[in-house]
Length: 337
Ligand code: NAD
Ligand code: UFG
Figure 1 (cartoon, rainbow, N blue to C red):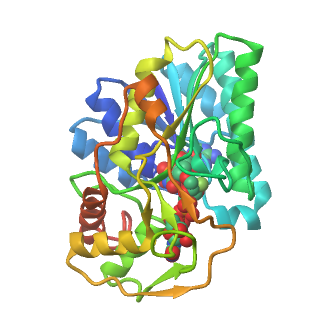
Figure 2 (figure 1 turned 180 degrees about the vertical axis):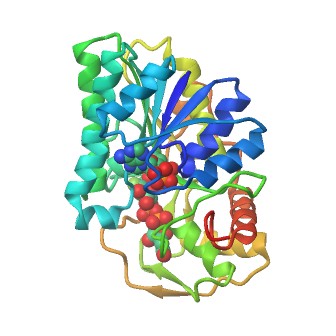
């Protein structure tokens, strides 16, 4: 059985469906600090099956031990953590506690129960401001904010575990920019308050919840002056986790893999694609750059194909169509619709 920490969240809920489709049994462990039980209820409807879940905090050893007592856990996919860059600058201790302490407690309990296989959610943020694009896994690493540092440190912690005991099997998946939603329109990204990320902001503008998008910077060295990112459909990303689990038993070293499409799209490219998918106008104005943003970030995804046999299959039109279906069916997200 697979333990999915943070499985009620955006990427976790989509991964639950992919796991089920691939025939993996799983139990979700989540404290619902950034999600709701409703996402799991909807996953149950989609897969037509009850989901095993435990409400608990990864920083609480007893909560975690109870999962190992009640289920035979073979491997862990570790999504649980806090993820807002701006908030991490304001509340560094919360981020270090949740993301680092949480991982340490999780790995301690895994070790105690002789479960030593973990797939970890890392991020392209560990590349800092890359000297060139596309980004390969061996590029230099750096972090410019507490959130990014937790990703870097967690990668190091997991590498140290492997060094200490080669029975550990560790896959570090560095996600680029996850967007989109399940085809059903029943699950998707449901940020609290004003979205920090581009796609949910565009979607909420299209549905009439926000007046206009602020485009952060129009003078970057990119094809239209706006920031370029590697947007990846969350269903493709979920599939990457299935491939990782299918690979993990044969690992001879820690595996670090970019999960991106290899394509870079600008903010204005995304606005246009969303307008096409939704048939709605997305009003925007170009404002100052956001502190800490970089001009361009996109992956070289060739290693993922080589070692995992994984490759993204969905383009930006599908990403936008699926985001729009979720947003327009659930204008107020899960709890308030
Ligand atoms: P999310 O917030 O939707 O999901 C995270 C889940 O973890 C939530 O359900 C939350 O309730 C749970 N959680 C948080 N702290 C917990 C704790 N202490 N104990 C138990 N559960 C806890 O985020 P997401 O977008 O699905 O991201 C999943 C992972 O992927 C995170 O580690 C995130 O940092 C990483 N990641 C996300 C992105 C992105 O842009 N979405 C990019 C790169 C990496
Ligand atoms: N942007 C806007 N207006 C907005 C929001 C974003 O113009 O209201 C722009 C940004 O300046 C950037 C692009 O849209 O050029 C994407 O911004 P996001 O905030 O959606 O994503 P980031 O690339 O800044 O960061 C995301 C996650 C990080 C993660 C990183 C790399 O938020 O946690 O991808 O994976 F580390």
